[in-house]
Image (cartoon, rainbow, N blue to C red; front, side, top):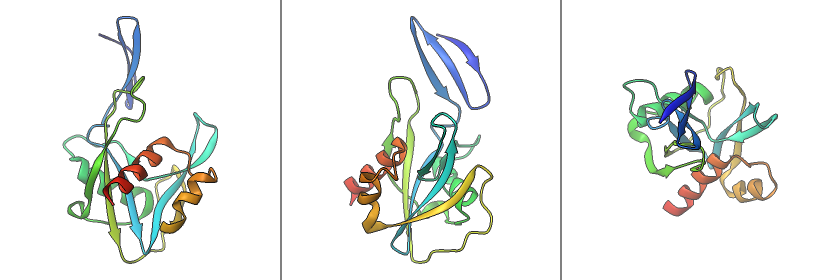
Length: 162
């Protein structure tokens, strides 16, 4: 196994004739589904690989010495302004977003709170925080409003745990 290319976020690894991507910090990273006042809280972000704005569940890489639960709390706060203690997150499963080319395994967490907040500060790569009523999620998927594979997999885990 050899590293063909490396940057702070990922490495391209060659194993025999196959190549795959190893993401730094994905194993202790997190995907977060937050339900606030009967709405799921998502973020709208521009994804260069798709050349489009996508609606996604908040997520991100873990930092060194950080647990995935701590990563969930940090990423949620950085991307949406919601401050939730890490102990409030329920681990609902793990996903492997693209097992053919990514070696990543991402923990998925869920939390539910009673109130929505007005967001004043969010991460610079986030365009806006998007609220979708819980009972409208299926319509948002069927209409193509939500197409991100990680978000869809996280929602599938949510429904499997419901």
